[in-house]
Amino acid sequence: MGISLKSIADDLSLSKATVSWILSGKGEEKGFSAATIKQVTDYARKVGYTPNLIARSLSMGYTKTIGLIIPSISDTFYSQMAQSVEASVSSYGYVLILGSSEGDETKEQQLIRSLRSQQVAGLIIAPTNKSDKAISMMLHDNFPFVLIDRYIPELRSNYVIVDNENSSYSLVRHLYSSGCRRVAVITTDMHLYVMGKRISGYRKAVLDSGLPLEDRLCVEIDRNTYIEDVKDKMNRLLDEVPDVDGFFFTTHYLAEEVMRYFIMHGTDYRHKFRFACIHSTRALDILSPEMARAMMPITDMGRKSVDILIENISSRDDFDQKELILDNTLLMEGI
Image 1 (cartoon, helix red, strand yellow):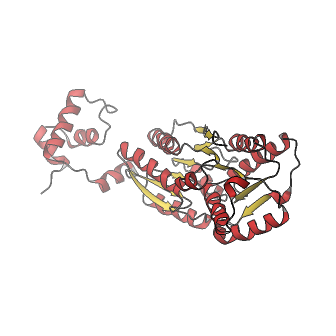
Image 2 (image 1 turned 120 degrees about the horizontal axis):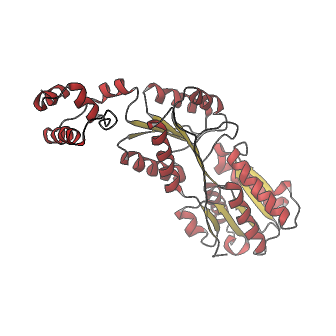
Image 3 (image 1 turned 180 degrees about the horizontal axis):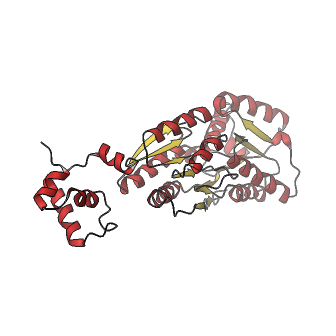
C-alpha cells in the first residue's frame, strides 16, 4: 500500500487535517509552527509521499494545471511564447495544457469551456477578435485569466501586450528617413485590435513624413490562404505601384513569404527595396539581414503573464487587474 496522509499523520502523531494543510502549502496560513511544517514536509519527502492530485483538486476546486490558448502552434512566435509560458508555469509547480484556436472563435470558445471543465486553475489566451463573450463570462465568474499579445479594449482584464503603434511608427519613419518615398504595408487580420494599432502607426508615420496616404499601398493578406494570396497581391501591387521602394510587414511570416516571392521571381530585393517588420525569425536574419525590426520580448511576455495569473489565482477576491504594456527592442542599425 502506498504512503497516505493518514499513515504520515499516525507516524508523526498529528491529525490528518494538520498534515493535509501543511502538504497543500497552507501550513503558515493555518498558523502551524515552522518546526511542525518542517517536520511534516521532511518526513513526507523521506517516505516518498505522492499527493493524490484528484483528491486535492476536489478540495481546492481546481487542479495544478494552467491552460494556454494560442492562435497557431506552428507559428514560431507562438511556439516560442508557449515555451516561455511552460518554463514559468513549471517553476510555480504547475503543469501546462496547450491548445490552438487556429484563429477560429468557435474553436477558441470550445477550448475555454473544455479547459474550465477540467478545472484548470487559470488560462492564458492570445484571443481572437470575437472572444468578448467568453471573456465576459470569465470576468463574471471571477475566473483567473490573462490575455497575451492581444487584448479586447472594451473589457477590463489582465493583459500583457507590446507597444504596437509606437513601434510601427518608429520603423516606418526610419524607412522614410533612409530614403524611401513609397512604403507599402503588408498586413493581415486588420479586424484585430493589435493589427489596427500597427496600421495606425504606419499611417501616422506616412503623414508625418509629409506624404499622402495611398490605399494601393495598404495590402491585406488573407491569413488562411496567405501563401497564395501573397503571390496575387504582390503581382497586383507591383503592377499598380511600380515605384514602390519600401515594405513594412506587420508580422514576420508575411515578410518571409514576400522574400520567397522575390526569390522565385529573381528579384534583387536586397538592393531594390528597404524593409521593416514587427518581430523577426532566424530565416529573416538570413534572407534580409538589413531589415529594420521591432523584436518582441517573448520571454518576458510569457513570464510576466504567468506571474500575473499565479497572483490572480492566489488572491481572487482581493486581486486588481494588471494591464501591462512592454516595449519592443528596435533594431535598425543595418539600414
